[in-house]
Amino acid sequence: MKLRMQLTAVASLLILVAFAASARGQPGPCSNATLKGEYGFTITGQILGGPVAGPVAGVTLAFYDGQGHLTQVDHVLLNGNPPSVQWRPATGTYTLNADCTGTEELDFTDGTPSLHLSIVVVGRGREIHQVVDDPGIATTAVGVKRDSPL
Image 1 (cartoon, rainbow, N blue to C red):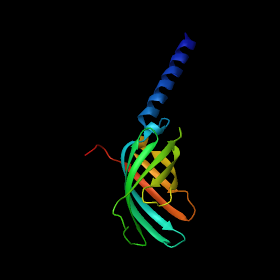
Image 2: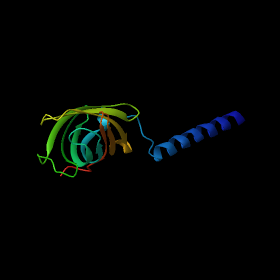
Image 3: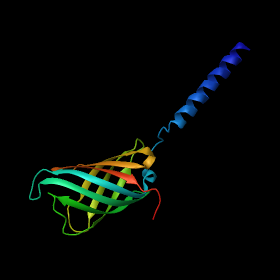
Image 4: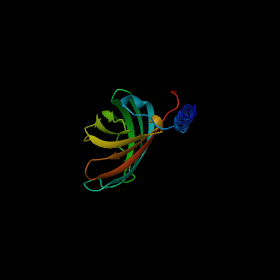
């Protein structure tokens, strides 16, 4: 009888711990499906060399399809100068690992070299944090998911 009461107490404690963890919003595993929908990004950083070395600031609107593909448009200022094209389109791919880290590759339609990024997804897909991995580019971006389509 005493053993049964102890087992019941342990089982109850385990259920409480599991409930508390889920109530705190513990993230589950991520996958490509975690990223689905529209995200608005703010870009900041610097290009460290070459003909356009200097500060970078910009914004991006990206759409993730939940299957590893994305499309986006961006507007990026280099050295405070606006781009020659108001909105530069790109397509790309992404891979999101179970621990919510991942990579992206962006290919621009204007011939700009591709970008390779490392990403971290937080808030169950509500935010994406990015850093460009290509040499000579020190930029980061934070994207927030749009609540609902317009």
